View 1 (cartoon, rainbow, N blue to C red):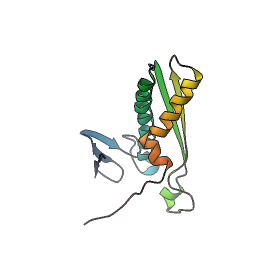
View 2: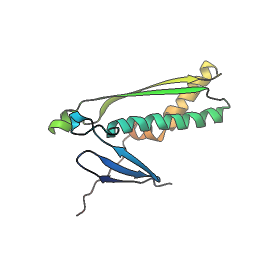
View 3: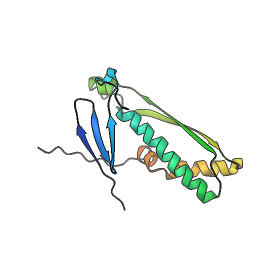
View 4: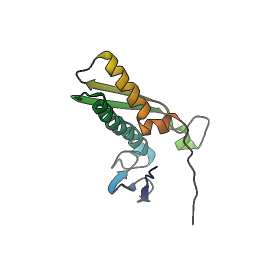
Amino acid sequence: MAVISVKAEAENSTVTYIDAGGHRVIIDEPPAFGGEDTAPSPVAMLLASVAGCINAIGQWTAKEMGFTIEKLDIQVDGDVDATAFFTGDMSKRAGFSSINVNIYLKADITDEQRKIWLENVSKRCPVTDNIMYPTPVNFKAEP
């Protein structure tokens, strides 16, 4: 089992600098959430992670199935209600109420192969697995 870690440093109330696997990533919020919109928001990064994971597992699965992807476009949209963020009212969830993934796959394959490919992609993506199934998240705050 591998452990994947990221480390974050808060620059101000919305800008976060992330060190992840030797890469530096910046996250910010749009002005409506108090940010300056200098980088993607945390929830946009989550959707970007879905798209990136689908690309990776999609390419891997195509290779396993013996075909070449000519073009792969992924659109990920999430519906979110910001009530909990702005007010603390938890009557609606703070996260996405739904995430919709639309994939355009150009490859010389049959409809059956496309179906098998999509089943593999949807089941083998670690990011969507963590969204679709409960994953324990443990918090602690130290001095």
